[in-house]
Image 1 (cartoon, rainbow, N blue to C red):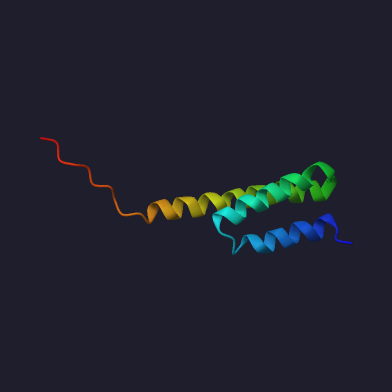
Image 2 (image 1 turned 45 degrees about the horizontal axis):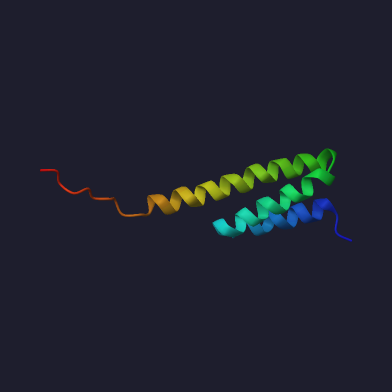
Length: 76
């Protein structure tokens, strides 16, 4: 039987290579685990949610910054 700590560690390992869509699923997975957690596991889940959200936002910002600049039509 897998413990909550094992599950959270497995999610954390997957997160490093995850794309945005997978990170969203991992966030939902951790949120689903949270109600049944207590003590250190609850703190681990909370910290992991912060990390996952940071990774997700970093990828979104990186992809937006990689876009070519938008050129506006000249106003006459």
